[in-house]
Amino acid sequence: MATKVKSRLARLVIIAVGGVALMFATGVPILIAQTPKVSVDEVAEGLTCECGCGLTIANCNHPNCSFSVPAKDEIEAMINRGLGHDAIIASFRTKYGEKILSAPTTQGFNLLAWVTPFVMLLGGGGLIVLLLGRWRARDTSQPLPSIPTAEPSPAETELRRQLAHDLRDRT
Image 1 (cartoon, rainbow, N blue to C red):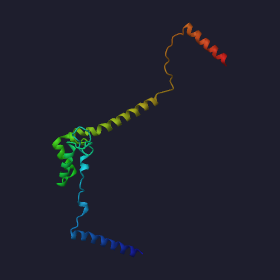
Image 2 (image 1 turned 60 degrees about the vertical axis):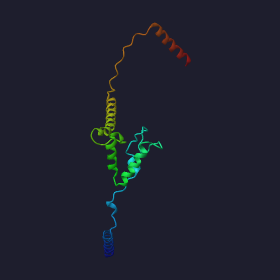
Image 3 (image 1 turned 180 degrees about the horizontal axis):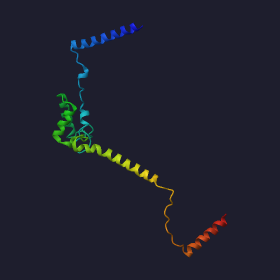
Image 4 (image 1 turned 30 degrees about the vertical axis):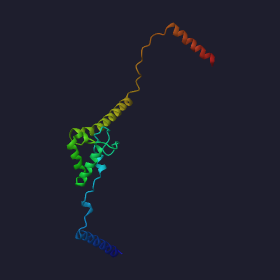
């Protein structure tokens, strides 16, 4: 039984090695080595439209936009020349500056835009936990300090007496 498994495994290995050798011999391109072609919309999502709409080039809602339509054509031409996503983004960044990027880069001062929200959330959460811990840990065995009260006026004393009398009569 074990010899059958070993012989099947040996056949599979021979077939796999033969298939790979045949691919190299016939010149069939290996798919792993090829980089996938990027689409216009993938690149356009990373760039902000400069027409004033505040959207990305891919989502600009102006049908005849004076910026996004030529930009999409330019992106398509760059893709056809073989440029990748990062190279196209870098080209637009060089041409229009940082404002063209739809998200800040993760370098230098722009890193602050990525880190600050998380730091603020963690700091605020830590502050809440600290305050809740202090409020719970407060010693409740000691009575709260009493606020000195003034002597009630004679009118107040009379009203209290009458209220107590009326409550007794109701029951």
